[in-house]
Image 1: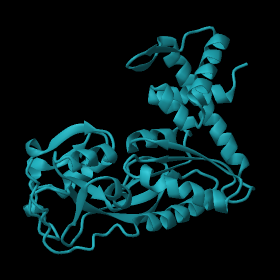
Image 2: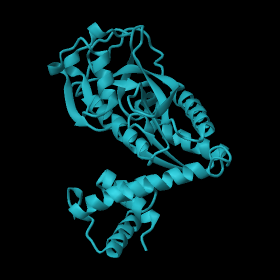
Image 3: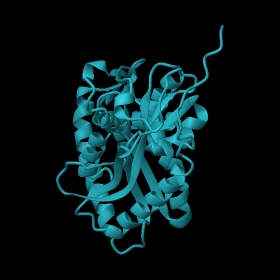
Image 4: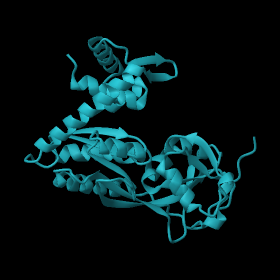
Length: 317
């Protein structure tokens, strides 16, 4: 018999195109997920995926099945949503999407916070770029999305959560002199590293450095802040870092954090949900929880040194 669990696993696999990542997304072991996919294929009598060293590909029949599976999951999501109208706040399954430049820093604090206060909550998380999360929100596969505002989509409601200030991250042993607070004119734009296309942080960095010619900017196709900051720590350039990322990334990377001069650039983080959601109290409670956790995450993020920043010369080899 085909089950909702199998369909959710297949949806995760189709989204990530990777068994390991799909298993993490659905909070099961990789062998368990793989076994369920094979059972689904056996039940339907068709091959849904092709496995290769480079990843997972959907077959032609797999693409057809995926469309129907996502329609079913969206209907189930709406059914679950409607039946929770008379239940308590944040009871049952809550499917939350978070952008990659925020998830690693917010989620580890948010999940324990929610579980402590809402004992019956079941959190399902999806980490992806804003455009993909909004598609998932629109088709009912997510209940809410945490991303940078503003967003352009029909039928959504939003609530601003907090302002996430930007700083400049440079290698700890970089010889470049950066007067603190830094101004746009002072930056060497040719050394600015960016995330790959599709990440909102890339667009925000371009907006902060609007006077720079785009040909001067460096893009290495990095998919995460962690990768980008490792490149910075190894002297490959500099990059913008959000305030929420500073406590974690500064602790594990040899980087120096330099604040901007006023008005400090920032991004506005908000909660986004379908305007038709019949549980507005859930969205209010979720927004309050995220705002509280974000404040806790950002504590200690602001650099204490406001003077000129210059690293010591590199030791002779």
